[in-house]
Length: 207
Image (cartoon, rainbow, N blue to C red; front, side):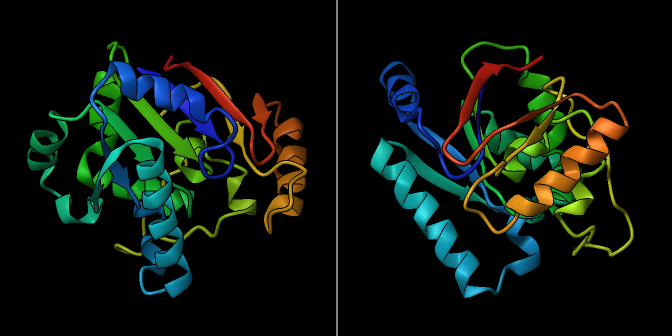
């Protein structure tokens, strides 16, 4: 599986996504679960709408999926996903996203197809961070909340990359200053990481 990891929105390598569509099905699943804690926020709704429009402008045919509709229905989600080869997971709260992935089985499915060719995972901000080996230190940026049961917080990432993905580095973003604190803690704990400024994109294979 190919990973398209962006700091914010879809970054500066849109040409790659357009080439992908030329050679593959243009249908894409859009996962918005990182925003579940703010589902009634009009600002967040507008951001989701903007993401849909951006993907459509690139050439994708977008199917929005709410993972919480598949909590404890993993086989149903898997049945839906098997007809798609491209997935997009947008930003928000990484801890909310991680829990939604676990409860729906989306994490298991992505790991299952991670070694296969012909699949593309597009993520930005939290959607990329969640692929890290660990989510430790990211709690300096994202609130450790769980809107689903208010108890479990998962610090283990999907481990599809071998470093902690750090977005919004030295960027004009509200979280940019907090990112500096995250880096200090990662270095203190000798945890491998990569920083991306908004606009930056990493394209690589899943490990």
